[in-house]
Image 1 (cartoon, helix red, strand yellow):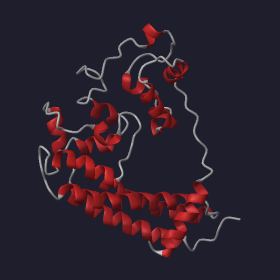
Image 2 (cartoon, rainbow, N blue to C red):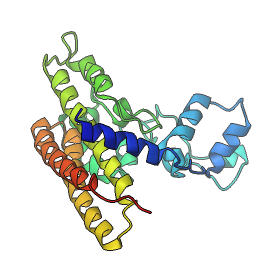
Image 3 (cartoon, one colour):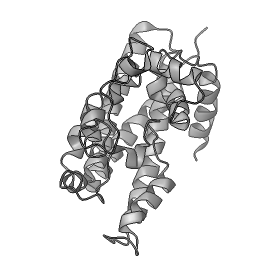
Image 4 (cartoon, rainbow, N blue to C red):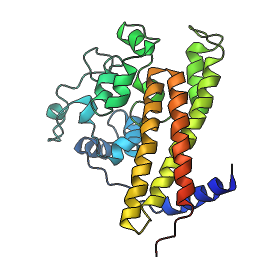
Length: 252
């Protein structure tokens, strides 16, 4: 890693260390936390640590039910088992459920061969939870993603493609770097005291995010040539922005 980037990352870690943990507010979760005998306690704890929990995306958003009451029969009315084809968290229905908030990835995923397999009843087709977990909005590390791809595309998989998983890992290694660069730039921009200058830098940051979003959506389509091209543009813009930020005076 280049010295400039190494120093920026260390400073960015220091700046973000004091970020407050958001307060969750879900009546469903409160009731289930108060009852240790309630089912799916691990699922509940994963929600509590997740971006969904931090952003107050309550249980009813995906599972249904009535969060306005703590009376169990009424609160759980209409909730279906995930194995039920009509459940919004059934693996076939899950992309549409997640897509009600995550529109871009959902639209992109519908253009993929994987989505076609899933909708055709072929359970080899992955769904959102295959890579992101059931509730915790997990972003698999590149190494974990390689292992997940190899479950189907490895030598002993049902659809072997020997080089695919390692190629994907390399791309997602690069994607992870650019995500961190953009996150780091966001922290620095917030500390620029001059309002006009801060807005100018924010505009540049927004322009770096555009190809990053395209790369992410290409990943949900599994079109890796498009991912690589968009990622290269995003990295070029992010690195140019960080180079400029490295010369910005600190806020007094």
